[in-house]
Length: 207
Image 1 (cartoon, rainbow, N blue to C red):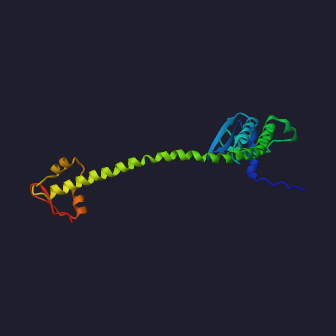
Image 2: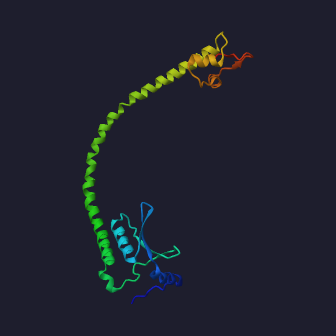
Image 3: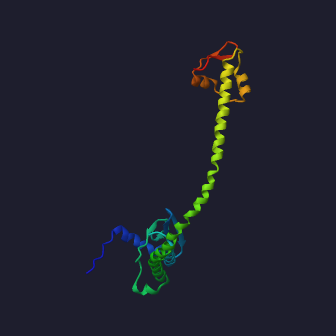
């Protein structure tokens, strides 16, 4: 003996509005984004919902909504308005095809998965990528840049500790280093930087 769940009065009131609705939508969630189509009849929306169910690649099912004149969406239950006489309707047939397609998918996916499992043998191809190790030569070129930078630092130290007073402009032009940070270099080398009244710079020997 089966028992039917009693509907909430609010749900009953919503279902009573469906016959007066002139617009219906079929909506399904794909890739976390709703995909919605609009239709002029409930039957057309149900056929589209069945088509979406057949093509969906997840367990989600399309939902059909009736849109009132005020723009409110009412969820149409799957069995709403369906009678035994509707078994041969186009919408019902579409639902049956969608169910058959869903049932056939797992078997097809299992059969397709087996050949794909054998493909890892082609993983030998990445061995060709080993040739990409050649860029290591470029990595060796970078130390040259460090040497160049260190030579500039040495030139800065030589100019600051020399007998001739120099300006910041003199150092920048000699090293071709416009953004040079003389204070940082002196601090790093343990040198005491001194600036004379005429703007010239000098420093103690590095530690």
